[in-house]
Image 1 (cartoon, rainbow, N blue to C red):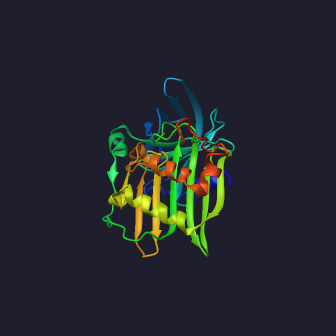
Image 2: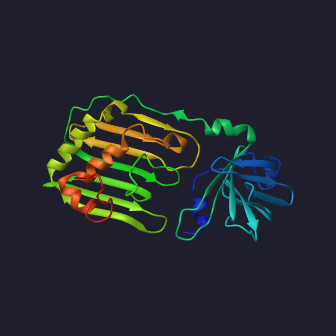
Image 3: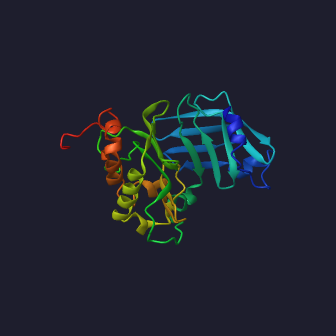
Length: 285
């Protein structure tokens, strides 16, 4: 899909009072990217993007209406952005176009909105803080290492976007673990494990006190990788822990212990330790 097609499908709609004819009155002046240090300035004939203290570029532009959404189309841009979307009077978004990789997302706001956008908000739900079942039906864990995030995991865990799933099936469980780099698979383990593995994992989760954080969810408006852990049990009980934006700079539970436990289990040790996905550390025995 083209970037234009992607933007059109984002679902953001400009306020009803903003049209291509009056858009300049709404967007003129300076805007600040809450995901970085880029400053956007919209003048009558030119848009200027200043990338911190590194450099700045000027570009001609025009407004483009597409249904209920309104865009700023850059003419012959000298940087990897073709469109900016006017969400409303308070936000403009854009996506850096990079082949086979995730480019930077720009969330431009007015200066007086920065503090509000960066404030961490508690969206937590009141969920039971005790899980009685030890039979997992489904488990999903996701997080990202790199870009300033380590969660104290040893260096042998590769940087990338982590996805771990455990699904109950007839006769056991399917285990699916993947680490994705920008445009490549950094690590992958897919295999069947028995019910004993899932039972011990459920008990480990309880021993580590993760149910005490059930319902936890905090985030702010920054477009940064978050983390999430969801577990469904045979009893119908559920465990949900997640964070986004700067709230995910640290993890509310001991992610290192959880990953190291999974790595060391007899059914997965060969896959993790002996295959350089997470090589055996010097102090392992």
